Length: 366
Image 1 (cartoon, rainbow, N blue to C red):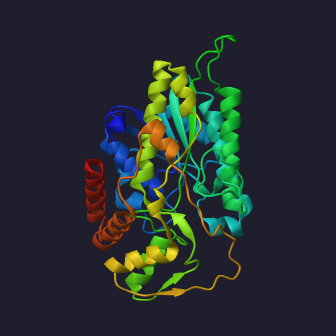
Image 2 (cartoon, rainbow, N blue to C red; image 1 turned 90 degrees about the vertical axis):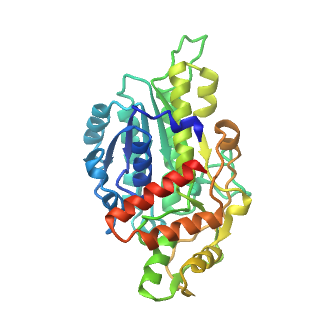
Image 3 (spheres, rainbow, N blue to C red; image 1 turned 120 degrees about the horizontal axis):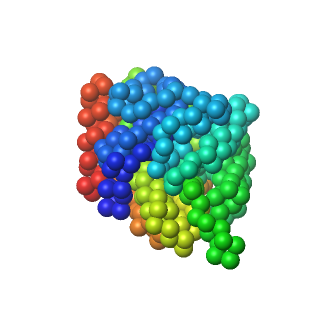
């Protein structure tokens, strides 16, 4: 944790998707670290929305815009003059992508291409962490490591796999590593991608996500409708992968500014952020853990017309362990407890901010 806690003080940071669930947690954390945060995103997509509950619009440089508007995105990025960029803006729901794949690809793929093009206009060193997902892997033996083949069987995962390919292509074509013989100098921008998924934390109000669906059902006193109870995923509290993103960006920036070519080369790629083997659990186990803290029941939901999903998905985060010293700090039981506790206690805007700050402080002290 100490590797990045002091790295962002006074730094200019540009966050796309800062109005979303993970983007709001990240923005709040960055503000607490002393960063000067600029955000570019559509308005919050849910009501309630963590972004509004935290009052972030009044505490950072907030710009509403669409990733598909290349001109607006470039103007916002250039005006922010960032030292670091975190790209979280996306259409993130698998079922939504299944129903409208063209829209998902336009946002996720071309929106990222627009950001990559805007990064080419920067004239100062900048690290950029592009967030994708654990669903970018083609069928392979679990746990899935960064050198496994990229691919997908459904539109959402496909869009994020395409983002991985785009980032790799732009890195090679426009931000290549220095080569002594060719005289090629250091790149202006250092690019990495971060793959994680199935994160949980308070403040997620999206539809068709397990924890928000649990909270809505339990609040109404009705059984939780569970679509795929046997599906196994790498569940983790949002603060764990966010800590990984922060550590990765800080290390990239340090290597770029210090002109450490070897270090920059090993960091300029893809990173998995996920729990150890003990943190991979079925949907049914997650629901059971939630019900330990918020009594209720669940039922098997009808799944007709659902997109086909991988029954078991496990990540290998060994690369992040080796190169960043990153490891999850909250195990599965702690992640569920903290998430449920947030929803139970954050009944007002002031309480939402208080709970978020308390959990950030507890996490960083752990």
